[in-house]
Image (cartoon, rainbow, N blue to C red; front, side):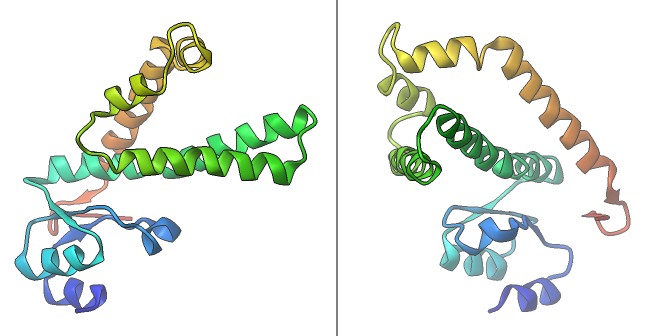
Length: 167
């Protein structure tokens, strides 16, 4: 069943819209409320993650708000390398390769994200240095604050009559 048909047939069921990323999204699609037909549809596309309530759905919605930041981070890495004399195409190719390997490592769900980070970090090595000097407690708190602000906004834009976002 096409998603439009599923949404018309089961009004009030929410799912995340991932824009361009949604075209190739292969992971779970958060849905609320759970519905067998809609969840079965998303299982065919890569997985369904029915969530318990609207509050949980909003948390997953906030997480989707980080996708373009990730791409902008990769573009910033590429620009930095180009600014240090690496041809832009070579820099982008290298950065893409690095983070494609990260994507493959993420497929190993037997290891937590913290374990994966530790697996790639040598004490006093390059990765530890960047993590501890750039993504320190202050920057982690800034990220938390940005996500909390987005979550507050998502929750304030709900239409009480439908339970759906008013975007």
